[in-house]
Length: 343
Ligand SMILES: NC(=O)c1ccc[n+]([C@@H]2O[C@H](COP(=O)([O-])OP(=O)(O)OC[C@H]3O[C@@H](n4cnc5c(N)ncnc54)[C@H](OP(=O)(O)O)[C@@H]3O)[C@@H](O)[C@H]2O)c1
Image 1 (cartoon, rainbow, N blue to C red):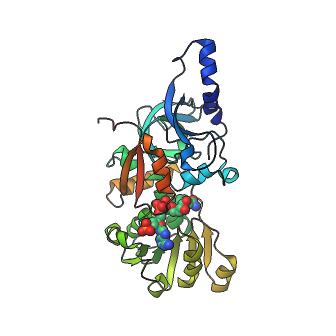
Image 2: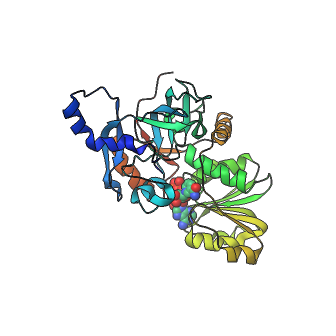
Image 3: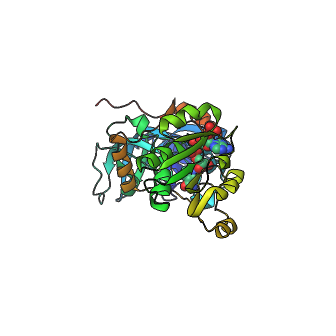
C-alpha cells in the first residue's frame, strides 16, 4: 500500500552515501528516522534507517508522527504476497495508523492546519516513521480525550468496524449481531459501535479475553475454545467475521433470512448466501475523514474507546510485527515515535 508516487523519496536512501560524498552538503536535506524494508519477507527484514523526509504534494500535508498503530496488515504487506492488490513497492515503510501534528500543508490543502493534532489512516502506509504525508481525506482532528498513543490505536480498527456495521450492514437498534474476535483491533471497536447503536451483541474470544468482552459491552460473551457459537447464536441479523475458514463456514447457518455475513478476510460463499436467502459482503476498509470525525465524536462522547495493550518504542518494530502476525492481539499494540507533546 505504499504510494508509488512517494517511494522515490525513500529510494534515494540507497544512493544517499554517494550523494553526500559528491556534494559534501550533508544535513541540507531534512532527514528522519523510519522503519524500512528493502526486501519482502519476515519481520526481520525491517531496519531502522535515516531517510529523507517525504515532501508533500499540493494536495497533501506532512504530519509529524507521535505514535503509530500496529496491524495484521503490516506483516501481510511485508510478506509481499499482496503487493499487487495493496499497490506495495519496495522499499516500504509500514504503518497504516497514525496520530501526530500537521507540520506543513500543500498549496491546495483547505481543511488541515499547521500545528493541528490529527489521527488517521494513510492509505499507502508509511506511518512507522517520524514524518508521513497524508491526503486530507485520510485524517481528521484527533479525539480530544485521547493522548496520541491512544489515538493511534483507533483508525484502522474503528474504520473497519464502522464501515462494516454502519455503511454495509446498516445495523439498527434492537438487531442482533454476532462479532467473532471481539477483543481484537477491529472486534473491540465493533462490539462498542454495535452497542452504541443499540444492537444486541454476541461476541467471541478466547478464555483469557472473556472479561474484556464484557467490559466492552457484549451482552453475551462466548469462549470459542469451549463453546460452539452456533449453540448460542441463532437467527442473528448480522455476523462480523475477522477469522475466516471454518469460523466463516459455520456462520452462514446462524443468520436469519435477509441478514448479512460480513467477512474481513474472505469473500462469503455465494452458494451458501443464495441457498439461505441471506446477504454476504467482503469488507474492504478505506480511509475516510468523515468517518474518522464521527468516530472521534463517539470517543469524546465516552461511547467508545481504544484498548491499548502495549506501547513499544520504534526499535521494537520487529517484535510488533511478530505480534500482529499472531492474530491474537488484545486490542492494539502501538509504536511510540516521539514523546507526547505537552499541552
Ligand atoms: N478487509 C479489511 O478491510 C480488513 C481491515 C482490518 C483488518 N482486516 C483483517 O481482519 C483480521 C482481524 O484484524 P484485527 O486487527 O482485529 O486482528 P487482531 O487484533 O489480531 O485480532 C484478532 C481477533 O481474532 C480472535 N480470534 C483468533 N482466532 C479466533 C477464532 N478461531 N475464533 C474467534 N476469534 C478468534 C482473537 O481473539 P483471542 O486473542 O482471544 O484468540 C482476536 O480478538 C486480520 O486478518 C486483518 O488482516 C481486514
